[in-house]
Length: 436
View 1: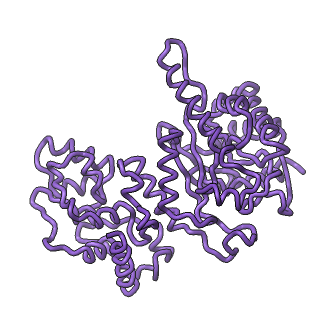
View 2: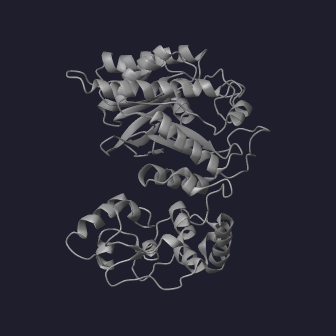
View 3: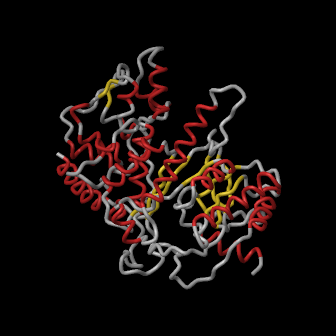
C-alpha cells in the first residue's frame, strides 16, 4: 500500500474526532481535502492541521467506533518515519501549520504511545519541526509515556467519550473510566508544576503548553443534557481543561446497543450544548443555573441564555448605564466584548440604543431585557410574547437578525414558517412552564 492510500484511509478514520474546529478543507490545486482541519492557537489565529491516525488497527471493540476490532474494513498504519516525512512535506509546501495525531490501539496502549512518541520525536528533533502539534494520549498508557508525549506536543487530549461509567462499560468493554481519568489528572498536575517552574528564573514550561481537552459523544447513550453539562463543569474545575468538545453521534456502524443507522445526528442538541458550555466558560454561569434534575434537557427552540432569562424575568430589565459587568453578561444579546464596551462607553455619558447597535449588541434579543437612555421595554410584556419575539427569524425594526445555523436547514421544527413558529412558541412555553 503506497503512502497516499494510507493517508486516504487514516485521514478518513480520524474525521469523527471533534477536537478541532472543522475538517474537509478542499482548495483545488493548493491543498488536499483529506486530513485537513482547522484549529485556533492561543493567540486566536486559525491554523491548518494535518489530521490523521497513526493506525486504524485497534485491539479495542468500542461499539460506536468505525475502527473497532470486530469490524471488517481496510487497515493501514504509518511508520513513524512515514508520518514525519509526510507532515514535513505538507508543512514545507505551506499546506499545513501543524499536526493533529491520534491512533487506534495497536497491540497495547503503551506500544501505541511509543510509536506516536517516535513519530513526534522525529519531527521535533530530527526535522526541527516547530509547528503546532495536538496529540491524543491513549487511555491506559504508562505515566512516563504520557509525560514524554506532553513534552513533544503543544496540546494533549484524552477522550472521555461517554458521559457515564455505565455507558462506557456497555459500549466500550475494553475501556475503564479510571484509565481515562488518570492521564487527565496527570496532565493537569504536570501543567501545574510547569506553571510553578515559570516563576523560577531560567525555567520555562514545556509540557503541553496549550493545555488539554476532551471529547464527549452526544446521542449514542441515554444521558441527559443536565448530566452532560454537570460532567463538563466538573472536568473544567478538576482538570483545568481548555475545551470540552461535543460530537453528535453519527450512525456509522450497526449494533443493537446503538441508535439505528437511520437516526439523524442530533446536530441541534450538539449546538445547544456548545452554547451552554460557552456560558459556563465565558459568562460565569453554573451548570445548575442552566439545567436541573426537574428540567434536564436544553430548550431546542431557544438558546440557553435566552431560556434562562425568560425563566428569570424578575431580574430584568437591566439598566445598561448602571449594571455591573457581570450582570450585563446575563443579558441575552450581550457578550463579553459588548459588556466591556458598554462599561467603557458609559464613562463618557449615557448609552442609548443606537450606541448599543454600533457596539455590536444583538438588540433583537437584548431589547426585551434592558433599559437605556431614552428606552424602556414594553410594559406588561408576557413570557409568551417575549418567547415569540426571540424566536421569530424575521428582521425587526433594529435591522438585526439573530444568527442561526438551523433555520435554513429546516432543523428547527417546521422549518421556520409562520404556522410552525406558532407551534414552536407553544412548545417552548411548555418547556418554560416545566422549569417553574
